[in-house]
Image (spheres, helix red, strand yellow):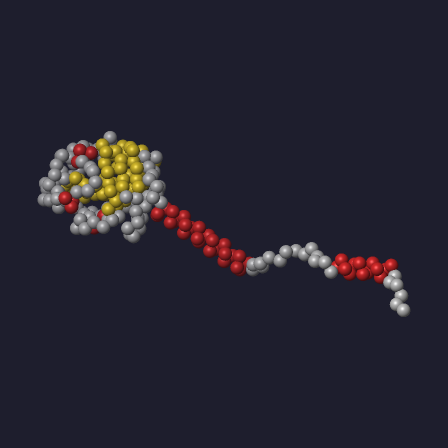
Length: 225
């Protein structure tokens, strides 16, 4: 006949039953090696930089804060390639903060400088991907974004405005007057071109606040066709 279990044996049975329950154990997660962790960090950082750059180039919100460079071309014949007695090309730099700033002109081509004013107050500037409006010394101008012109090929992907009494329709765009610039005659042809430094040549207009280095325009007269 089997003997009854001793008190110590009962305790052993109870302990054995308890030990059969699911014990508390640390949760087992995915183990990531140091090399894999570094790779994940690098990829995440690169993705963040790419998204930041994309937000600069594709942001369509209008802004009043920007820096631009460009040219102002003048021809007394009243058209782009007319044989006028006077032609001149000026380098243009523009800086605006919250819609207000300055636009400066520097003669880079021409026999003489017909302008007595080379610095203009900029007010009410609003730049969007497809249009730039502002006032220069109180006179309103509007420059649409041009990206596929056959007339101003070298100035594509820029804001452009032009005016001239003898100019054909394909040489006129935007809203500007020679009277914006003192000493120019009312019928003269003026062509103002502004763009953002380092504008990518992919037909994607963009606007960012920048303090880029002034880019000198090429020497010579009117933009080539």
